[in-house]
Image (tube, rainbow, N blue to C red; front, side, top):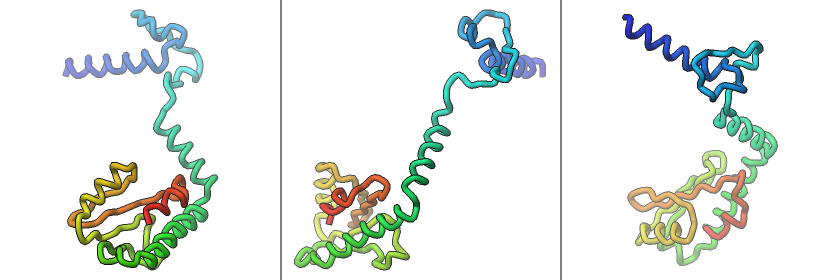
Length: 157
């Protein structure tokens, strides 16, 4: 019991040292604790990066507007549908397997590749196209309407 009490006391001292110590002398690491007399004692030394990133992301999404992002996602999907109609002979080699009803689809699209699908996937990734390979023979693309343009998406189709 004595050992765990010392451990708790040591941890409390370490936290107190960094959280409430006079910030002008905090990193001198002198043996005595010099408390700050104000609420500023609870200020963290470093900004909480994760919560700052989350806050900024929420701001960006609000500014873009979820309705506008969903509309752009649907436009990405319409360009896929138009491309599928123009596939011609390529239909022998691939089939778009994403649901065609925009209400039941998400932002990703998938193609079933009948032959050499893995080789096509490797060629796409070698040329900087970010796609997923799904066994046994599917390539999945997920253009993100927040930052993918129509120019980014159209070459895929």
